[in-house]
Length: 237
Image (cartoon, rainbow, N blue to C red; front, side):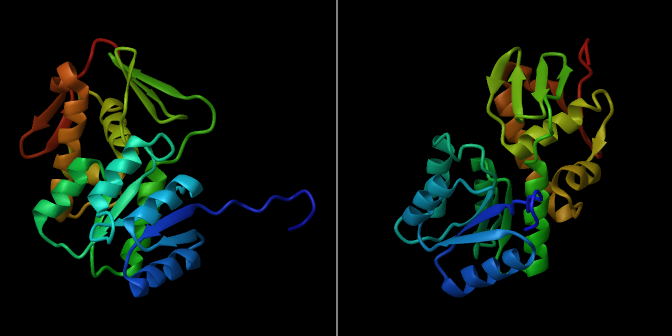
């Protein structure tokens, strides 16, 4: 490092995976792509490592010894150090219900084994982009909705509501285009970084979670049959 020039800080990714070969392969590809990879081989050590290291993203296998992935995820979300840390769930379970269960629990994305290194890196990049904070305080108001793009905090009628980074970006994208229907293709492409129809259930699951968190204002998010979703235009937006 030259004097006066700071080297960029590499983003830290925690891999919680009990299969050593899989964990090492994932770590190798992450390191090669410019990330710092940390490995934990069971649920309990995964929690301890997450709280000690406070990574930028967690790759969490569901079939773990000691404490399964869903239990680990719940503990991560209950702790302030990791409550907003994005999580991609990794599992050999290909059944739709397992994938939906993970997304409904609040995971940011889901990868089913076996997956290609290229797909893994693309998903990691996409989730990290959704979690990026904007330098300086930048707020956006849309009726009773307020978004702080710097802290990724969301307020409903001046009351803070806890949204994941993905939920935040999804609702913000709709709010910035209030009154104009957004297609599934565009929502998947702009929020998740891919537009394959196979991921439409992912969009529906996240929208269900967003509506639940909006409570009495859930009706602001309208389903446009055959198109996608639309945020109803408030008086001030």
